[in-house]
Image (cartoon, rainbow, N blue to C red; front, side, top):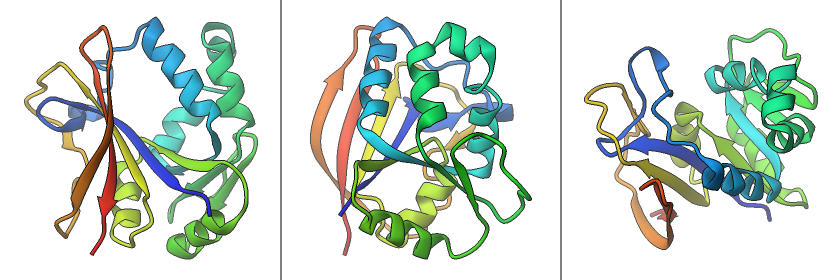
Amino acid sequence: MRKVIFFNLTSLDGYFEGPDRDINWHIVDDEFNEFAIQQTGEFGALLFGRVTYELMAGYWPTEAAKRDDPMIAGLMNSLPKVVFSKTLEKVEWENTKLVKANFVAEVLKLKQQSGKDIAIFGSSDLAVTLIEHNLIDELRIMVNPIVLGEGKPILHGIKAKLSLKLIKTRTFKTGNVLLYYEPEYK
């Protein structure tokens, strides 16, 4: 069975995006880019909520992305993607499927297929929904050494306490710290 892995960046004070959905504070350098290429290559499919899908689809298929980040652009464009949205009418990014209902059933079906693991990049609201149904197998949270003071908290809206088991860490030269957790569902 494939695992669903949630990856997101957060500030030290727990925000995954600043005011007005600002993510320009993410600390990205060559080491991060090498990590991103390696990590993205481990996955066989990507899951997105509407907001993250629109951001990703607005960048990765562009000529600028293909020129500036050819390895990641190639992976992002070629991987199968599933967008979960009740409001989108269509998706145009190559290799993308739109799911408008029965999100949990769709993820269960994807997990039961053979192949590489499945990633959720960003899409904190989707991650909350999947955590509440015990469908996320690992959380990879990269803490950036910055305090934002305001924004949207990571996993905002989660309704139940969830204990996490730390399984691995990685420190980057920039001060980013990647925490790998397994949820301990009750």
